[in-house]
Length: 230
Image (cartoon, rainbow, N blue to C red; front, side, top):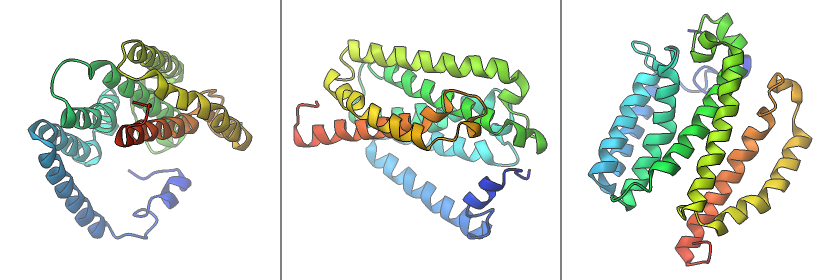
């Protein structure tokens, strides 16, 4: 199925002709085997979840199955592949007891689902031209926009719950609040509102990712050096 988005064609090294398909297949296989080995070192739980994640990644794009082209399955497989399973692999590497993983796992799933819905809305016209029907294409833009804002509200509610229960330290959130105004101002100055097709959440997707990554790195570094962030 050919993409109708010229930007994606040139951004992808395979479709742009910079990497041969055979080379890409070999590289994917080697990375998958290396990933499985690292998962095994982390423990049997991360190994099982990690292998499941690798298999799901194959089924997500493999033409014989192509989960990303099946409405409903596209969203479910996406949040498992890029959020839930990745989070649980990391969590069970260090802790195997209790249910403290449930709320933060729900948070990353909500964020991932928001991102996938936003991407499907952004690419809706190109997908229609290519005959590609996903969840947003089937459910319609109005319902998808409701889900997008619903996922934002759910993610914020779960984050607040994590802080209130002490799962995420309050001091870690200070980093996010201090960083947020600078990242948001920079993004709003650079954003072209037309590229988000009227979706007011669009300009905030990239800043949210930047803030999240920097905050998590600060949390991790604080734990490594014994800083009060922990």
